[in-house]
Amino acid sequence: MFSLAGADLVRFLFAVAALLAAAHVLGYIAERLAIPRVIGEVSAGLLLGPTVLGMWFPNAFHALFLGFSSEGSLFGFLSQLGLMLLMFHSGLKFQARFEASDLRIGAAIIAASTVLPFLAGWLLTMVWDPAPFLGPANQLTALKIVIAISIAVTSIPVISKIFADLGILHSRFAKVIVAVAVVHDILLWVALAVASSLVSSHGQVDAGVLLKSLGVTFGFLAACTVALPWMLRRVTSRRVNVLFRASFLGYFLLILLLISDIAGYLKVDVMYGALLAGVATKLTLPERLRERVEASTRDLSFSLFIPLYFAVVGLQLDLAHQFSVGFFLLYVLFATATQTLVVYGTCRAIRCDRLTSLNLAAAMNARGGPGIVLSTVAYSLGIINQNFFAILVMLALVTSWMAGSWLRWVIRRGERLMPGDEHLVIQRATPEPTDWVPGLETGQR
Image (cartoon, rainbow, N blue to C red; front, side, top):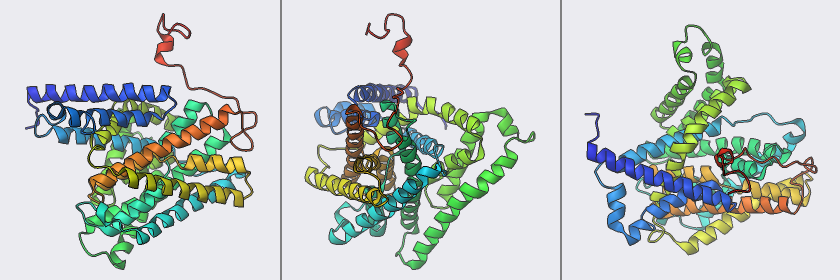
C-alpha cells in the first residue's frame, strides 16, 4: 500500500540523481560565469526536459521522467517540498526593523516599489487582453493579480546570494535591500493569496468574495506574525513541551507543516503558510537560535530539495514549442522599465544621488526565486497556462542576471553602492570544499 515497486524505485532514483547532478553542475558553472546559481539549476531542467532532451530524444525523456504512472507525482512532491523549505528559509530572513538612518529610504522604497508597479501591471491588463494566457481555472481577476505581482516582485534569496558572491552582504546597501525585499514580498504574497482564494471560490467574483479573501488573508497574516510568536515564546521552552525537547529542528519543521496545512485549509495558499511559518519562527527565537534553525534547514535544503525544485521548474518548460519570444521581450522591457523608473524616481525624490538610485533600482529588479515561485503557484492553481508560465520563469531569470551584472560592474569600477559604503571592505564567501582537499589548494587547480 505504501510501497514502490523495486524497478520503479530504481528508475526514479536514477532520474533524481541525473537531475540533481545536472542542477549542481550547471549551478556551479553559472556561478563561475558570474551568473546567479538559480539560472543554472533551472537550466538543468531545460536540458533534461522537453526543451532539449524531449525535443531531440523524446523516448529517452519519457523513459527517464515518465517511466511509470506515478513518477510525475513523485517529482511533484519533491518539488513542492523544496518550495516549502525555500519559502520557510525566506521567512527566516524577515526584518521589520531598520536602522534609524535607513528607515526613510526603506519605507519609501517599500511603499513605491510595491504599490506603483502593481498598479502599472494591473493597468496593463486594461489596455492589453490577457485572456490568451488564462489557465484551466478560467479566473481572469486572479490572472490580472498575477500579472501585477510579476511586475512588482523582488527576489530575497537571489539578491542575497548575489551580495554574498560579491562580498558585500555586510554593506549598508545590502542590509537595506534585503530588509526591503522581505517586507515587500510578504505584501505581494498577500495579493497572491487573494488570487488563490478567488480560484477556490469557483464562482463569480464580487465585492463579498473579494472582501472575504482579503479578510482571511490579512487575518492569517496577523495571526502568524503576532499571535503565533507570542504563543510559541511561552510554550516552546517549557519542560512539558516534549516535542521541542525531543528534536530542536524537528519541532520547527512541524510548525512549518502545520502552518502550511492550516493555510491550505483556509484556501489561502500552502506556500504563503510556509513563508509565514518562517516569519513566526524568526519573531519567536533569539538571534542565536534563529541562526541555528536557518543553518540546519539550509544545508540539506540547498543541497537536495531546493535545487530539485528549480530543476523541476525547468522540466515543466517547453521553450521549443510553447514560448513567445517577441512577447517575452516586450514583457521584460515593460517590467524592468516600470520597476526601474519607480524606484529611481522615488530615491531621487528623497534626495538620494543618481548612482545610489540606479543601484537600488537595479537590485529591486531581481525577481529570481520569488518570481519563479509566483509562476509555479499560479500554474499549479490553473491561473496561467503553459505559455505564460514559461514567460514568467524566464522573466525571473533574465532580470536576476541583469541585476547581478549591474552591481558587479559598479563594484569593479570602484564606485560606492550608496553613502556609507565608501570604504567598504569586500568579504568573500567561505572557501569552497576543494580548498580543503590536499593537492587542490589555490594555485594548484
